[in-house]
Length: 441
Image 1 (cartoon, rainbow, N blue to C red):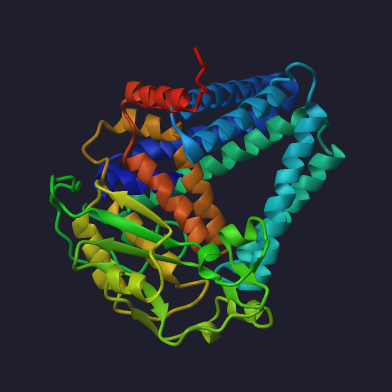
Image 2: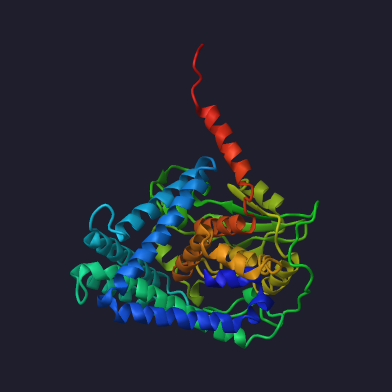
């Protein structure tokens, strides 16, 4: 989440404030140390109460806002808000003591994350897979400690997890602030190495510095096209819940499909990465194909336009439109990225190209907004947490069209907020009235 916030504000707005982030990181780590050292002196109850209260308030707000929307988004946001309220009740021991329940939930989450990291790192072997593999075993160790209530009793497990989360968050702030300190003015954060792997563009890529937002009337929007794996399989498919949504779909004939993502911005820019020779992915070779090693690098190609791609295959399943973005940063990214057409199914694919293009395009869109007020709004924005969790999951496994769809949709909602709550309530009321049965008079 912190990295996405950096990108949305742009380099100049953050480089000037690197000291503030450094102090905030140090304070977070100091607070974490206090919570971890003083668990038996009452601080544990305070930390749990604060976390539970914040989650409860955010869950209630999420339910209220979700009620103003319709269809799938309404169900998703109300379900997420309800989950927050339930979890907050567990933390606040309402209506009864929930120490064992919260320990079980935290342990289950650690087990799930640990197993996903271990299996994906061994299977995909992406850059940095050894570190991800060790982190996975660390998650399993934490789950074991929580499940056995040793060395801490069950009622202190939540505070212990809060303290560890604060420590990790503070470390990220300190590391990010220290790296911001070394950046020259005008650096493009989406094009440089701040945290993990090297990006395609470099800090010295020439770029203009006009107004960062393109929302002119009549200007071409930026459109992200997504073909889901479910729609690519023509014959009867094998039902694989979640896997077919985020990874691949499997037909009864043994063929595997992963879906596709492309980005369109006017007639002159279309990002759609394909291998020159179509990959034959089946049940027998899928384990080998997903390896992110150089042996699976293939010559790639760039399709010229959405019209040609839709005519050759089928129209895209989802279209996410952006009116607010930086066309100059997008063009600079595309000029740098397309110099290398190498295609790798899990390491350098269509989803990687589009998500990095989105990062470049939205950089600095909040540069002209009040910094601290906007930063506070982003800190409590549910889609910021969603986008951050999707990014962490994708970088620990691989970017897929399903994850790219969630990530791009979340960024779209962040950069194009629905400010008119009255209008949303009106739409919800009209939709409810249409669904209500009419009585015969």
